[in-house]
Amino acid sequence: MDLKTIREKVRKSEFDLSEHAHKERQIEKISIKEIKQTILGNDIIEEYINDPRGSSCLIGNEDLHVVCGFRANRLLIVTTYRPEEPVWIDYKTRVKELKNRV
Picture 1 (cartoon, rainbow, N blue to C red):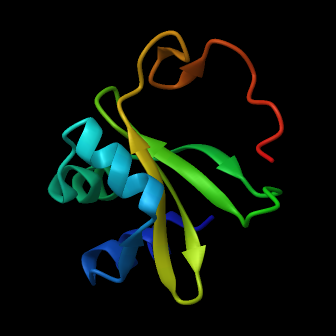
Picture 2: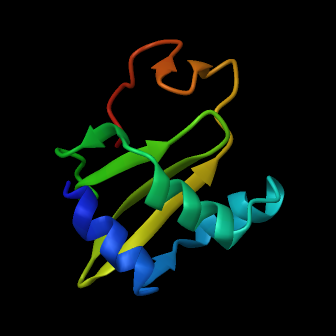
């Protein structure tokens, strides 16, 4: 995925949150501002190019992860969460490999 295009969509507010992302955002008290800052200021950690639901990627830092992809001509925030154990050793390292995302 092209990080430059992703950031451009965020700067232009051409993005939507999935229902799941909105729910997780509320549970974990994550602001839209935090989501935008995470995308604008961090690199892609993982890419999910062959995901049957559509290509997406994980962008993040030690405080926040954002999974995003494209729906039509808009960026879709698929989910957002705080990277913590037991899934994450640190913000770039999963405890175990990601299995099929289906």
